[in-house]
Length: 221
Image (cartoon, rainbow, N blue to C red; front, side):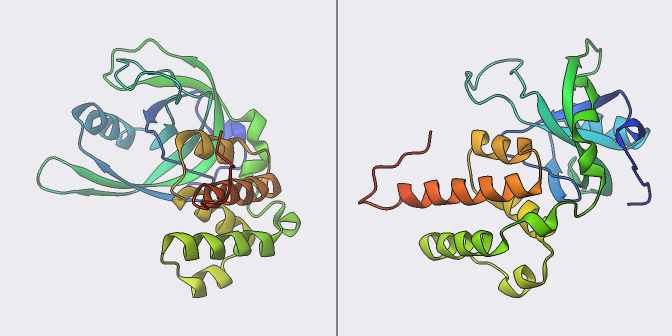
């Protein structure tokens, strides 16, 4: 990114938020998005005029899908808009680079069609330090779980890229791309540190694998 964020105080107090179930952005991760709803087209237009920050956040999973204004989880991740393209048919193709997780302090009453929240990144100051805690990650456990998952699901993986990836990039990329549900994605987001996220990733993967085993009685809660 062209802008360096050294700590929580480098982020604005209020940002637009993009509620999207199943979408997980993590610090230094990359998230491509296809923007087509008019309210989010307007959000991108507004973001391009400002600090280019969007809060990715999930709607809570235990509510009706038809809720007009779905409740949001209290933790999301700030992303900086680093790539932008117009498609010619009214859509935007953008890419966000993860900066830091945030906690929602208050949803603001606004006139814009997109939602905005007052946030704090103070509980996640560790997110501003690249590769923090990499030495504590059990890389072999992560790779073993990944291998079992690919064998069970037929998922194609660039193993050469996996082997070359440092632990932070590996754990965060796998967490973001894993085909898990909303609650599981939120658990990965809220893991306190990289070691805990890796352990959560392995545990969720093993539970998902157990669901595909006819002889197992384990179910994902």
